[in-house]
Image: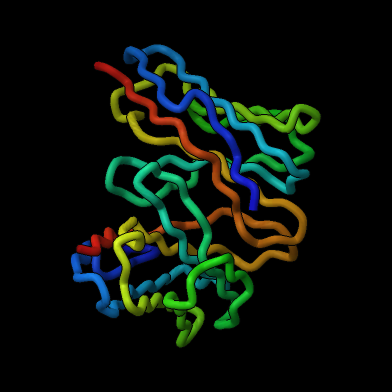
Length: 115
Length: 111
């Protein structure tokens, strides 16, 4: 069984559209993340949720809005897509810790191409 | 958040040789982790070394950590073509639950 799953795997869309990416984890983890990986493979944290509460919100345009209906799901909604949003988006999860970050488990990624 | 730096950016070796990748960072850390990313796939955790540890082994992997130099290295011994991938270091610092990732090393192992 897939531990962290994302849908869709590929997303091709026009500039200005609104799209969502879904993420689910069946590991029982409390913390989930969204990362953006650019064309140079640089991986940057976007958001982190712990038990449905936002704990990290890096400098990300407010066109990006995460939503966590329960601790097993963290979806990413993007409004008014721009060319620069083209990237690979990864969801990840990790167990709750008292401090510091432990091992993270990554989904397969969603390849977003904005035309 | 400060990015970690990795070198080399790219490394090409023959099967059976050892591969060494280095990671440097600028802050005090809680732990440092190494991940592998095969082409078109997500990242897979390889090994975690805590700030009070100096060396750790896992199969053909050996990780060292020098907190005085703020650097870590990943050694893959007896490399195989299947080891071809990008390798990333990542570290956490303070009470932050986030990881800061390095710039990655693209390893190519030629059969």
